[in-house]
Image 1 (cartoon, protein in one colour):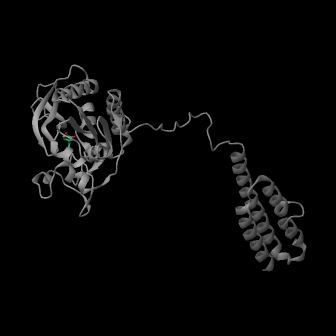
Image 2: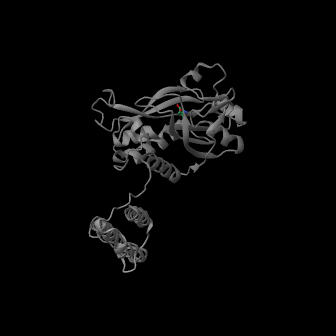
Length: 336
Ligand code: DAH
């Protein structure tokens, strides 16, 4: 039945054309092409007289069904297009808008800025240096001789035999003193690396180093500076203590503890029931270090200190897992 084949051809063509139409004008042209007075379907129906009498009712019904089918699809497509063009059904313009998240500083960067602001106000200048550091600056010139047991204190990432990812910001002491004669008063914030990972360690973390060298600098200056720093950082009612310690590049050395900010010294889990928490290392620059930078220890003296920014952030906000700071979970971060 040739006519039936023709109808099916028209149907295929119509459906694939409908798929490719992109606007209301194209749809109107399509309507005229297929359904109009001189359209493909109408013309075919006009040929009814040319086919065998007994086939006419069957063909007539097929043609009418096709006309209805295409009219139906066309109406739906037109309605969709109108919806889109008018911003109709698809978008409910009465709904409240979605507020984009506002960016702000990560808590570690906030605390870093606060530490630097306090120290800059005291007269320190910010310096920056390489994260990939020579063994010489990271250890040697800081009085860690090769094979000195103190090197075991650090789980170092070695890049090559003489190159490491710096394990602390202390190498900046040497880099600055090498270039500059006293008086020197610098702080060096930045990233440091150690092969270590648990609730209180991450392989990368941040430190701020401080160094002051001049004529007549005493341990009293060190105590005064760090006491004032702690009071500005944690509140002027917080108690601190200087506990004897050892670092190869300072002599004498002291670690500074503050009264536990969680229990205020009573003793709790966070401070292992001691009432105190360690916040930094410090000491008077060891005369051996001056030997590496050609300063005369008979004329100059000074102090240095180094603190961990994540550690201070955790103490300040009572965070018990350092990994939280690096997981980038907005539910955690947006609290700061
Ligand atoms: N660099 C030491 C560390 O990472 C911290 C430190 C201790 C820095 C004493 C100092 C200092 O400047 O005097 O463990």
